[in-house]
Length: 459
View (cartoon, rainbow, N blue to C red):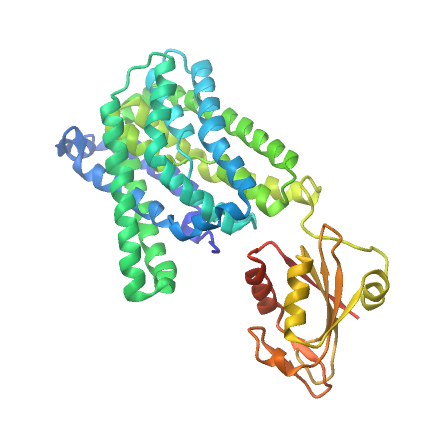
């Protein structure tokens, strides 16, 4: 699954700031606006804002993919590390820093705990794609987080607030989890099944989900406008409260990121696995935090305003993490993804024939057998330019792996290759040409992996 950061999402930080300013202006020019909206309530929850909060949550919970959970045991280490960070390290760090910096501001303490105890299940797919992380791992862990939030969010928040004897309405907390997580989760699951059955998975992923995602962002921005219009007078009189709540959020982010960087390095993860663990393990689900704060304390509360700062810092902080990951990769901070067998050899073909065993592949089964036995981390394609051909000729493949199971496959012409999933053709020079993208897709599918890199060398 590849996600892209669209123009609207790319400038989300700007829209957030503009909506905050608009809310403050409305509080001074038209103070009755938010009061009227907040007046339509059921059981203390504003109906318009409740609808917005629901629309915020529904698209995020569409990312749950039960079928991906079956792959959990294939490579559990990075997923387990991420879950530990999400449900143990991040909440404890958030609570300790909130107690340290916000002593005497109980609702602001709760807002930081709400943010620290809610791992993200939506935007991390975008950040992971931008960082070129392992998206299969990303989908698995976000699906797990979506499920575990249902059962762990309320208990974790209750424990961390209870340690400091902060009184919260635990019944309201449970109700908010049910209304803003449970119901959207169930609707998301069934709507995905129905839409996929009728319109196909491609339409669901490329049309429906992006469309409701835009609605979610719009609902989020409307909620921000109302929040800041209701609290405009307090904010203008006491702007230091937003600065105050930002300190534990930013310090906590730095601590959790540092922890995840160290743990992923000690665990020997490669870049694509490591950066995904760091991103997901350091994230916050600000939609859940905002929805919970509003339902527990009301729109015109410090807790609701405090959780909006998680949204305020989301884009710049996560983009900074993506940039940091790319720099650390260039510095070889984690285990290298690629396997470089030699550095200074003029001919790749000469290197391949001298340094590793050559396998002459004449049967399709030989190709598959070599693939499974070698378990490559990297595939080097020896290629040669050919006259009257748009594509270079693929003369052979070097399967290279960290465990020194190397092999050079000297591809022979065989009818069985023409009948396989790999698009091949025999040109007039009598050589087999392989489409590298489809070759990678096939090999990743055959090995159940997606972290293999294919590199081409002119011979």
